[in-house]
Image: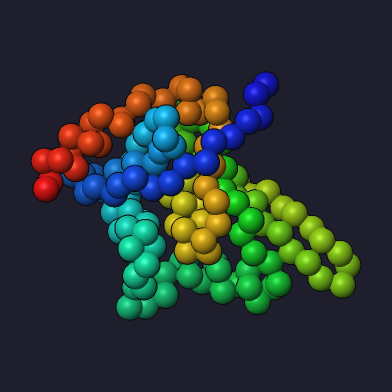
Length: 147
């Protein structure tokens, strides 16, 4: 099994009739993950460097991790099954007992906003990137029409 990963970034966030489409991509390929509107808007705010008026769940999570002496190290979108994406949130913690790294199963939507908010890298497994449709041209067309 190939364990290689590719760094990706948020290329765009678009509202849809059922929520938001978040476009993620590398230089080679762009793909889309659909999610509910609230988390899509949180991702857009994080991309823009904006804060919500009140703390959201991801802000609480960052504060909680910080209080425990832990931090997000990276996020890996590691699988896709029947159009549903899966992610691993990698968290590190250092205390008097030593250094510990924990991988947590998490929704990609939550993981993306945590990575952006904590300014940590976002990756996708190569096998996931290989299996999804390339949306690069579609995103370019949407962005061009929006100008």
